[in-house]
Length: 159
Image (cartoon, rainbow, N blue to C red; front, side, top):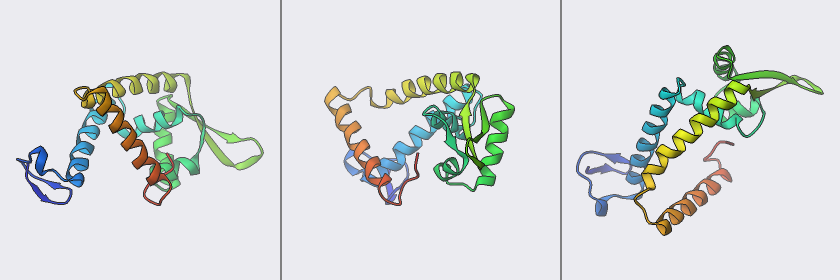
């Protein structure tokens, strides 16, 4: 691939020619492709799979989920309607706050999230499997640092 500008790629780039933006764009495409394929194998859309994985961490409020997904609460309502119809998640009121609604996984949703997470983690692990243990740890550390810095700025959502 040949770089056609920062973050833009065409066929023919060699490792020595790849800038950081191009590498991140290409890596994003690889990760999204894996995430989409594994989602489909689990009869989920990528956004449904992400919802289940976010909820594995525990109940979340609808407003928090809307911020996490970068959508209005109305758009999240449609996602939740579909998840509830499939028996994957449920909404309930928050004790002490009549207007607040929290979302939790059902048992079926938890099983689906765990199965999806395990398979997508294994598939994504193949991306770094040819790296030495030292290089994998270096990559993990750099990735964690980038994510942490973005979370403290306006570049990232809350999830």
